[in-house]
Amino acid sequence: MSKREEMKALREADRRRQNTITIIIIAVGALLITGALIWPSIKRQVVKPNPRPMADYNSMGNKNAKVKVEEFSDFQCPYCREFALKAEPEFVKQYVETGKVFVTFTPFSFIGEESVKAAEAAYCAADQGKFWEYHDLLFENQNGENKGNFTRSLFLQFAKDLSLDTAAFQTCIDNGTNAAKVKDNMTYGQNKGVNGTPYFMVNGTLVDSSKLIETVEKALKEQ
Image (tube, rainbow, N blue to C red; front, top):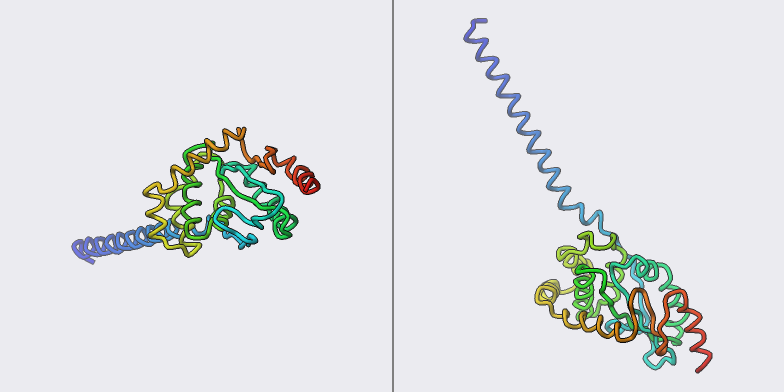
């Protein structure tokens, strides 16, 4: 092989090597992009439907029940999450389904801006009849306090997950349609003596979660 032919062969081998590297880079880039697109859906928790009896906006149960319970809760509060996912289902079964207790959920968004925006989004879902479903998604996907988890994109994804009118939902959160309501909730709760979450007003008596059941039982016996 002449020197010229040898140089040509080397250049050809180098070209093939460069092409191979380019293909690998493109393939890796495609995988990274695909991963970025599907990761939120992998990371996001799927929530099993938890029907609320006689659900109406942010309330549930028999409106004529002798015992009225109002829950003050923050969507970023870990103790609120514990109650929502573990204690509430049994509470609903024992007291709400049986018509003994009427429950209203009032966001008390004191932890941070993410709490405020989550509450606004929950009310936007409530405007389309899906407050409790959205409530469950927020608590199931809670990831600490003020860590940047509750974002606009996540709120919109939840709306899609629940088959809401996403255009109307987006307008609702972008326009701050329920911002005043969330702010008023804070003032209302503070005037009731709420200074943390979760707290519960049982026929006018404010208690924490450890006293909820005994206070409800006492109220039922007084009727």
